[in-house]
Amino acid sequence: MSTLEQASASPMPDGITDPNFRPLPGRVGNLTVPQQHALQTLKNQLHDEGHFVEERMDDPMLLRYLRARKFDIPKAKAMLLAAEQWRQDMKVDDIVRNFDFTEKEQVDQYYPQYYHKMDKDGRPVYIERLGKLNVPALYGITTKERLLQRLILEYEKFLTDRLPACSAAVGHPVETVCTILDLKGVSLSSFYQVRDYVNEASKIGQDRYPECMGKFYIINAPWGFSAVWSLIKPWLDEVTVSKIEILGSSYQQKLLQDIRAEDLPADLGGKCKCAGGCSLSDAGPWNPDEKTGNGVA
Image 1 (cartoon, helix red, strand yellow):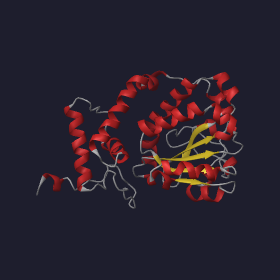
Image 2 (cartoon, rainbow, N blue to C red):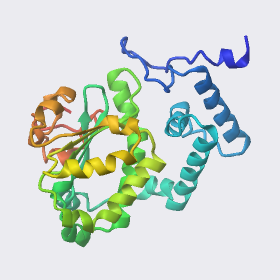
Image 3 (cartoon, rainbow, N blue to C red):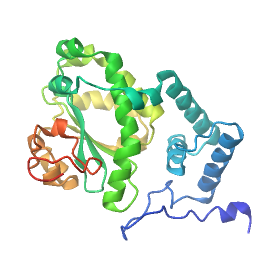
Image 4 (spheres, one colour):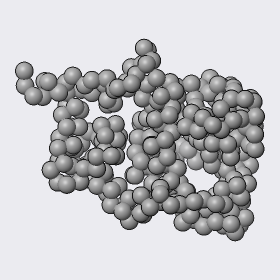
């Protein structure tokens, strides 16, 4: 048997307790022979060139970059090395160790962005209330730079804390997020004023933390948004488009198909009422000591 044939046996990840779990294609436990070969080749090249970072570059992380570049090894490596240079330029390790977003409660009043529990597949749920955006008030208490630093910190916690906790809770690897973007009351003028932040935030997610999107719900989409979406859609690849669902004001039933009522905030159609508000609770398996108003952590 050749080395390449031996590589076709992609073992299942460790720690699985869910008997029904089957990895999606291109993940650990479900790799074709060429995909397994690409993973090993990328890993070897990073080792040989002195770029491999043991504590971060595990197989799931390398596979995210490979999937993002359709398993084209040179393109995946270029993307990963660009992300590594970006980490140095942005001082990501220092942000993780020292950044303190002391204005969190104030910012929550004008631009709520938060993780809250899990969907039925075990993904952490991320909620962003763009319709509540108040740009003058927001930039009166923080800066675009600090918002981006907070975003980076949350991405890092997503990978190092939230995903492992969710994986342990459901008994199988969880690698992606379920996002709810609420456009209720959104003002195009406010969005225009914060477009630079939104653009940079989008690029960070796409280029530095690829393949983290599981599901993406856009709710309370205003009249006319479909026309805007029809212009944006051709720019996106088919895989990304398939994960995005645009809903109007009658979104609750769809969300509740994927998120348990007790895990969905009450103001989004669920039953959860965290003490102090869901947007500040950080409730989820990554934070087991945090109690919610309805007794569910």
